[in-house]
Amino acid sequence: MANIIPLSISSSEYTTVKSTFTSKMALKYNIQIHSIIRVEMPKHIINNHKAYKKKNPNLRCAQYFHGTKHVCAIRSLNNSNFCQPNVACSVCGIIRTGFKLNNGGVWFSPDAWYSHSYTNLGPDSSRTMFIVDVVGAANSSGSENYVAYAEAIMPRYLIVYSG
Ligand SMILES: [Zn+2]
Image 1 (spheres, rainbow, N blue to C red):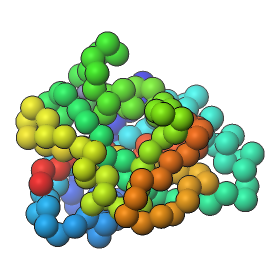
Image 2: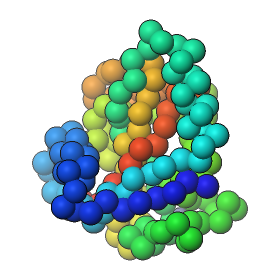
Image 3: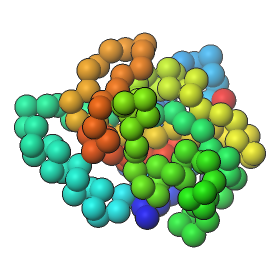
Image 4: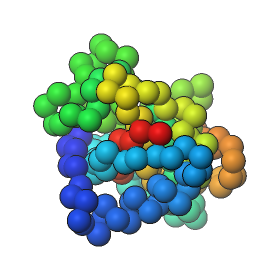
């Protein structure tokens, strides 16, 4: 199980992540950020990611966006109220166990505005987008990218927003 830590809006980490997100989001969405949550994955998932990086030293590691759906009241998400594993909530699933391959890959984009179309309006009218570290991704703007290895991708932050 991951540990999730909402960032204080006065922290420099919050400011950095916010600008990463807003600089890659289209103005037309008029977004409002409700929270930015640091996601610290379980140790074995971090270790798998590190091992993958080490095995592929020539591959670049960079930040991307992964917009996805949720079914819970995400604005009040905390470490003790993730959805149960039998509930089809993509956000809680990723937080619990990391990314899984879907149609042979894990999908993401260098553009938040592109990933936005994969989010949904949840029960509290919020959307969710992960910022992820990806090893060995092609960097094609305006499209979906994927990697074929789940350990190549690591959730870093979850942005809860509306727009
Ligand atoms: Zn959930």
